[in-house]
Image (cartoon, rainbow over all chains, first blue to last red; front, side, top):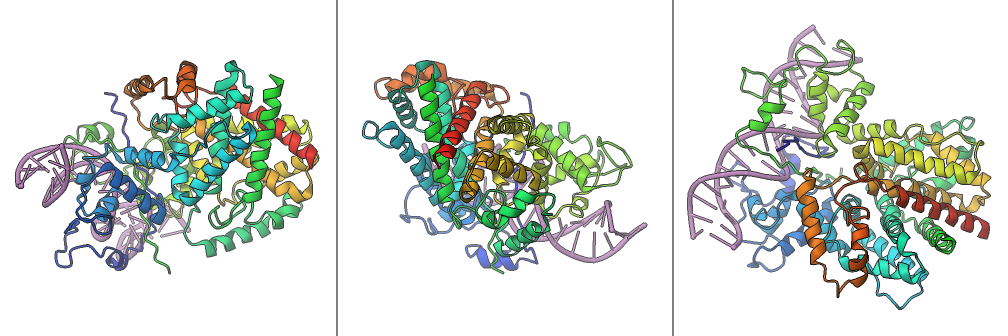
Amino acid sequence: MTTSREKTVRTAKKAVNVKDTAAAKTSTRRSLVGNSAVPVPRARAAKGAAPGAALTKERIVTAAIEQIDRNGLMGFSLRDVARSLGVYPAAVYWHVATRDDLLASVVEATMADVAPETGKLPWQDWFRELFSRCREVMRRHPNVAQLVGGQLVANASLSPGMIDRILTVLIAAGCQEARIVEMYNVVIATMVGFSTLEFASSPTDDPGTWAAQLQEKAHAIRALEYPTLARHLPAMANRAFIVRWQNGTEAPMDSSFTAYVEVAIAGMEQVLARQ
Amino acid sequence: MTTSREKTVRTAKKAVNVKDTAAAKTSTRRSLVGNSAVPVPRARAAKGAAPGAALTKERIVTAAIEQIDRNGLMGFSLRDVARSLGVYPAAVYWHVATRDDLLASVVEATMADVAPETGKLPWQDWFRELFSRCREVMRRHPNVAQLVGGQLVANASLSPGMIDRILTVLIAAGCQEARIVEMYNVVIATMVGFSTLEFASSPTDDPGTWAAQLQEKAHAIRALEYPTLARHLPAMANRAFIVRWQNGTEAPMDSSFTAYVEVAIAGMEQVLARQ
DNA sequence: ACCTGAACACCGTTCAAGT
DNA sequence: ACCTGAACACCGTTCAAGT
């Protein structure tokens, strides 16, 4: 019982908070009479699929993904998930152990079936396909993408099938048994590395002023101090990491992604040949 | 005024919550008499540097880094930072705009001076050095590492010097001007990609039972269904992404990291030569 | 077995008021 | 200019009690 005190991550509420003008707009399902903030689950399923459907982990995960897609990782709360399913928060706890447990399940559901079938493509093309499909999934659920990295410590639920296939293809590519763990790690890191950055969400949901701010800062860069940067800044604006104000959903980084993949494939060819 | 409703990310409280046995232990600075939860800032600086020092953004950032290092990203709260500085939460808001603003500053402070001097090393070695130094910083502040990816959308404060140097070295490496943005993105993604995964924190702070759980799941993997995985599982245990129960601070992935770097360098050599 | 209803101990953020 | 003190509207999680 180490009692290591854990707490919370909160982010960006930006609450208008002027005596509830916002809350009144959004929480349509709140009791109109009672001033106490009771959830009022009313008749099952506010907008979920089947109205009388039983509450299952699967339905919870689906609702959670919808929530995250719509409101972002920041806008995600167990209470809202419960609300959208028309149940009390505590009901969710019968099916999931904790908030993190739910998020792990979300990642699992999202990442299922990224690995293509084996034995049909040359290994180079197989990896190209793997990386593309992973990116595609992340592009469709950009707010989930941010989670993926975090869940990659130990998540045995994350399809053993995928791991098995990656190892199989690596061996087919001529990888030594002694170096297979290293190469597997290289593959995983390559698979999620670029895309998690590409789809990292903007810190604010006010892209207008943000773009202006950044452009102002860009102008302030002394051309004498940073000549190379100053020269390439126009080409980089909103197209390069750090120097952009939109993420990959609005400003995709296609050519950079393919460059990244080609570097990885070419590098793997070299390293595999060398050993 | 789109009024897009934002909320919060909370994580894993695991609150003991049995009538405050935990709280009594940790919050030593709480008023012993008054039952109301007043912060009792008392005489400046609970444990910060100079006792009478003025509250500056710099001191706040330093305190925040300490907090994050000790309690993790999950255990981070503005209120605790304020507490450790002996001030009221609202006082912090005079110096930082928001919680995310503070976190961005934390990343900035952590990542300052990762880029080595230019013109002293062959470009391959320069990039090796850059990647290693970035990893080293992340290893020292693993909980900050998780943040880095998220802050990479647009953070103009993130040292223009670094960007300038990367571009300079790329040109020295013979990169075409037309492809420099792509290659820059490849470099950034490579720089943070592996390490953010390597130092992603474990979902629980109870590694004992976690390891047991995973090992149990590993045993359950049908050798007939996933033969390649089953064969390599012993070699992968706690040394490969997904199949590990400790992160890079306790179980470093040195050889995989160097493999990753060598793949990247070799790949860049190929791609730069091809163009 | 599964869910309600209410509580507990936290949050981030705002805002008047003090100095 | 900088901070206090208190409030507001949220959280995740627990726990008895209902069915």
